Length: 147
Image 1: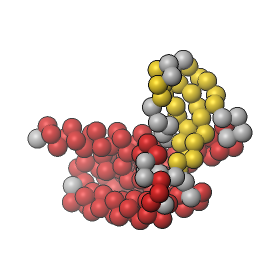
Image 2: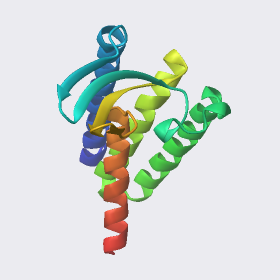
Image 3: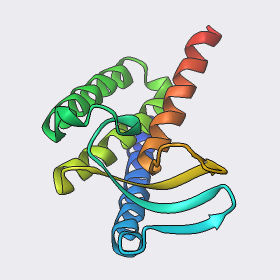
């Protein structure tokens, strides 16, 4: 097994582990209480997201999102195999996708718990998997536009 593959699998495992532990904690400790205020712009909340990013397209159902996420993950594995020098970028996105797939398979929805806001204007709640996907996409775009 190559060094890059070991690093990639380790990163995916670590992100998945942290993501699932955090979501379990949100389910156990936040769901009964709703909102825990941490900072003036940051709350911990418990949200069951049955849609895509920002809760859109809920009407499509969990099975559809699982199917699309599995296809996207397989495509990312293919990209990784073709371009393993960008292992970090692909690993972030794969880990995030797998984290949300696991939620949909176990619960039928994705658990979100991070609530950032300015006053009464809230960004849609998100989780660690979403953060990994977002960072991976930003890095992917940066690397490709830099060329």
